[in-house]
Length: 230
Image (cartoon, rainbow, N blue to C red; front, side, top):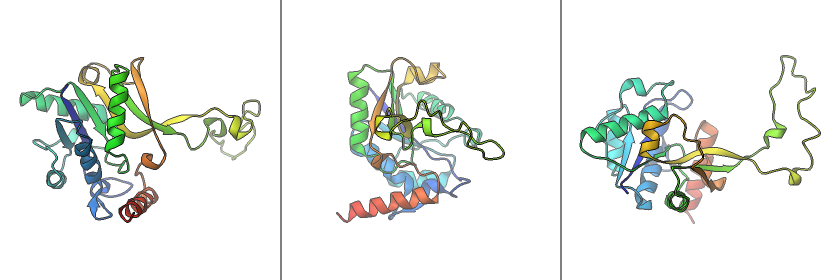
């Protein structure tokens, strides 16, 4: 199989400006994902999809293949990641390059490493899957969560018939945004990755940190600094 890794790194960010290239322990954030992709030895190409030539130049310094930029229409707050991936596939096809699988690696998961990627591909191959998506154990059971009315009343907030001792409750999992492997055919012909032939790759919470805000960033950076000193 020919495998393509795509790191989606559009410019700008409302929460953290230029989040994808922020300096994290001496490297731009996106570098950790590009490096992990190469270290996994699972990919024929590692592409960084960006609308910014400046971002593209940074990605190229770490070995990424960036022969084209993403269209601006696919790089705003309302853009779909799947549409951005399809655009990448089509652009490579125009250049005569075809891939059997496409793996989305979010740059906001800097602690997802090469071993995680390799193990996710093991699940993909062993299950003969159409797709594999990474998950981790949810921090809180959805049985302990609810919306609040305008007056913040907790009346009926939880169903006491379903909630017991924490250790007796079922384990729930959530998407962690780190790894999405899928057959190119599935990506191009379906709008739903979560079908019968899609399986979970379970990651630990340590590797599942997703950079959404400043606190996430500093937590991940502190972990990386600690690891580099070990």
